[in-house]
Length: 431
Ligand SMILES: *Cc1c(COP(=O)(O)O)cnc(C)c1O
Image (cartoon, rainbow, N blue to C red; front, side):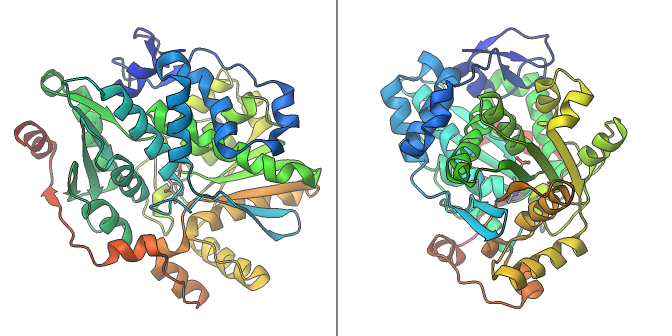
């Protein structure tokens, strides 16, 4: 399958080139040339399929012949070797837990899938690829873990100093090997701006093959559609229309959910739940898209003022606002509301939600108020242990620390401090 640039000023490319380039030369995001729905029988019989089989059927049209089917199946079974449980927390409400992977954030699947694809594409190539990625928290750890030891690929991660949690910082600064962490004196937006600068810097691009592992990369973005299919498989027997509420930052995850719907999965509505970084909820209210600098919140992986994947969502609806509004609702919530939700969820059902999941829960409840006869699933995108201080202060519980996390807690942090784009460039060129 070919992918075109949403800016329409660059040539179409194969899946392989879309993965290696990350972003098109005209700075547009890549988008698949066609989306062919899966046969109705796929959804009728989904209960009889394993997660790997579901994923293979869903992704193969996008990867097509560029990775042989056997290899693709092998990649998928490696990537999906943990659970994705749907946990019912009260009547008509369940949470899809996406945090059972190695870094306990939902980004593990996309990061591992991309790493395995790049690893496959770089077999037998002399040119090394450098993956450059900015993180507001969870991306860095998932990417570092997914790419660790992949031959032919170096990873450079930028993160805002003092603005990620201790566990998140350890997950991206303690691995070594082909992974380097750059600690930026600035905000996440500064990190993202530096990464964007690097992709525009022709002098730099002449010297190295750079790619991004943010959800703009199709290999990070597309595999997230599996989650929705896995949840559908579990929730189908409820016999009610399904609503997905997705705690959203760069809007890659929810956009992947809409892709699953385009593959034929029945869904009543998608809810994009945000913290006070409300560019999209404001757009859905006013039809004006006004990006703004991000504000720090307790759900920091969603502190994004200009969500990079929203353009893909608009494109899926041909930029037709009323069509989009039929399928997507979007609401924002304050930290105060989020903490109250965490407390209420715990009181009602003894379920410990992390701040991101709690924002998803709030979005779902707001939608279900008007649409009570639905089965709602909110996505739990991170294990509560990753936001330990906030969770333990808010609900007064002790969260048991899983082994994945214990493993990084006592490792030594290694980072290089930088402040400006020139320092980043210097680092990339001279290292
Ligand atoms: C990245 C992230 C999100 C936001 O996902 P997007 O695809 O960027 O919308 C939500 N929660 C957690 C824990 C994350 O790490």
